[in-house]
Length: 70
Image (cartoon, rainbow, N blue to C red):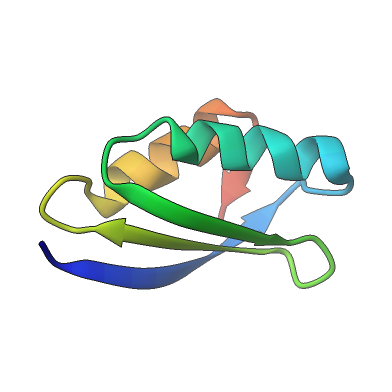
C-alpha cells in the first residue's frame, strides 16, 4: 500500500454542487481515501493508493464529472 497525496488544477468549479460532483466522482474510485476541493484556489487534492488507482483514472473521473484538469 503506497498512499500519496496529489494536487490537480481544475477549471470550471464555482459552487458547492461542483465540489460535491468532483468528490463523489473521485470517491467512487477504488483506492481513493480522501479528497479536498478548494473552489477559490481551483484545486483538487486527492489522497490515494498508487497501487490501486492511476493519475489518469483520477483525471478521467474529474473530466467525466464535467470539469477540465489543466
